[in-house]
Amino acid sequence: MIRKDTLYATAHELTRRAAIEIPSDYLSGLEAMAAKESEDLSSFVLAAMLENYKAAKEDARAMCADTGVPRFYVKAGNEAKIEGGMVAVEEALRSGLAQATHDIPLRPNRVHPLWRHDNNNNVGLNAPEIEYSFEPDADWVDITTVHKGGLFGTDYRMLFPGDGIDGIKRFFLDAMIAFGKRGLACQPAIVGIGLGGSKDTCMVLGKQAACLRTVGDRNPDPKIAELELELMEMGNNIGMGPMGFVGSSMVVDCHIEVGYTHTGGMPMSVHSFCLSSRRAVARLYADGRVQYRTDPEWFTPYHRRNDVKWQPEAARQSA
Amino acid sequence: MATGSRKTVRLKTPVRREDLEQLELGDVVYLEGHVYTAREGVYRRVITEGHKLPEGLTELTNVSFHCSPAASVNDDATFNIGAVTATASFRFGALIPAWFEASDCLLILGKGGMTEEDYRNVFVPRGARYLTTVGYGTGALLGRGIKNVKAVHWLPELGIAQAIWVLEVENFGPFLVDSDGEGRSLFEQHNKRLNQRIEGLYDGLKQPALSRMGETVDRREELI
Image (cartoon, rainbow over all chains, first blue to last red):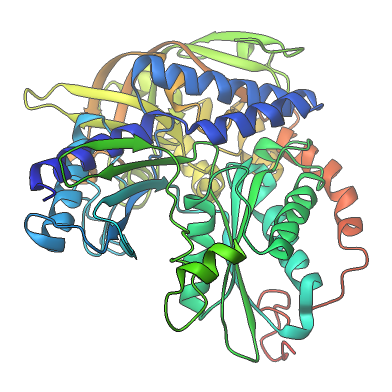
């Protein structure tokens, strides 16, 4: 049985880790990028960011004061038993986030869209977002928190089948250039692309691609994997770097997630994560253990399944 | 920190016009003295609703910051301040003339700069300058530069994220100089260099079937 108090303590600790500690995959990606950057100003900015991560960890203070809009992803094993059930999970996530907002502190970013009222704890109407996924043959629960900024770097477009890869590249460039100027997208970042689905699914897939996959991870479909690498290279050849200064550092990695879509369309979304790619993950076991990590492992073969009935053998062979 | 070939300048607040005149585009700046945060909520209260800034603030410093901190209020009414990071400044462009009148500021700190038109028409005549934060998100480095929260104004009215936080700072930076004495912008200079390449990036990519609202401003036109 996974206990309520463990859920609460984990939500609190995850919030702290995400705000303060840069995930190691993103850090390595950025260090490699900084080593290749040849423009003086862009290099200066990257060096400042690398120093900032160190300062955050040494001082135990948030990397960036725009601590984004914290949200959670819950992946529950099909055999998991939770004290109080899923309602207790939501209560723990909401109260853990509210208390951590005060304790770390995070910026209380969540306000009513019209009246601008702030509960000062990052909790409110429909906030934080909590998304769910399930995993067969498991009795653990994975909780991931992501603190992504919210104003710039995201866009959606309805493309059509005939627009093809050219259409995808065009829209990708449009988004990178438009939000990259003056560095509004806080690049270089992990860029997520949602392809297909319904409009809402398309947005969700792109956001998850940006926030829940690590640097170096490739889509299991080799042709999609190739497109990921091609778009990453394209982004880094725009001639733009951090803060929109001349440079070559835009895309630390590009992840594409695909969903079956309307036969007449090819919707696409683009999402830039940011220079403080804040994510933290914990696995809660039935015996009370909690293990922390930074890879959400969200897109499991089961999560990406393509057939009517779950067929683990078929998934293993195609992976 | 290592600044490469950049010149590093240390400024004391309140800043003096003659010191600002020395600043060149791309210089790295660190501040010592006092700065205060002012963004949407403060601009609305001062400019739209006509409230006076809290007493003594404009005498204490002439540096305001498009920012809100990651901070909390303790039970004993003291403050716990972690990181500070700027918010995008372009959205305040239209309000800056009235803000300068109300605040007597000579230095605006923020994210991403403003337009050269704003610099030429509003900043240059006053001898004011704009510094941008670096990154963005050197929130921890900036947080280190805060020695003390001197006061927080309008907290009940505006909440933690929008209140005026008056910060006593030392070695507060890095910032980059974005505006110069002629009203040029470092960002716009880089945009000009980037724009020379942009058309070429699209070479060989065919147009999509459907255009998007915004590619034309004529609402009578179809997008297909």
